[in-house]
Image (cartoon, rainbow, N blue to C red):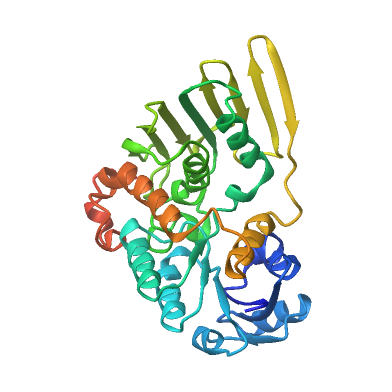
Length: 340
């Protein structure tokens, strides 16, 4: 294989700037086909982005002999379905985040690709962004000494209205926690290692749409540092702060920020400018292409993404009364749901 020729299933908003152009700009990569159920929208996307072919049937795109890797960019409820089709066709797959609605669906995907001896990647692209890689470099290099604690806080008035599929449990597997918190949790897994002894609680305080709008959790790293995090989607307060505290200093930056990272040691603060690229998924996509071409390794795989989904399931388990079944079909049994 000398070039990765991508086909996209679901050429919606996320593919317009974040990922679609990156598939075309990455070295050794091209975008040769797109699919959307609305044929007119598929044709329009292909025309605007100079993509040779378009389909309104996913099966036809997967079967396209010129497509040798598939990017699934649909809502999470169809990720497992489409990924399993790609595995059966013998092709590598790149899936949007969150990987699926639950860890149970993620395990099906991981097992299918392992059985087919094919790579599976997930779009946790913060693993490729400069600011997160700088944070990992500084932590691994001892810039803050021994890591002792991790704190993250996110808040904003997000759940006061519906957010399309992102707050439809049947489509998303939860509320905005799965869509937004997954970024931070996966990035912290990348920087500080897998999370152990995960505990959490979720509630519905102000939303009338049935999903969790407040979440709090804590965990332990392999090195015994303690982590805590909270998300409040029903407040006027705006916050997005990651802090890594060590014996000799602190690292601070925003999960959804512009790429500025501050290292504080004693009374001295040093800021590193690590701006995001124009197409934010391009660094990770380049790593994926490099792995497929045998010249590198991607830091985001089905296995690492499964860990993130398992963490989110542990936090939301009590709210939904379990997450190993089709919990989205039984909203009347969710212990955490508040009746307006």
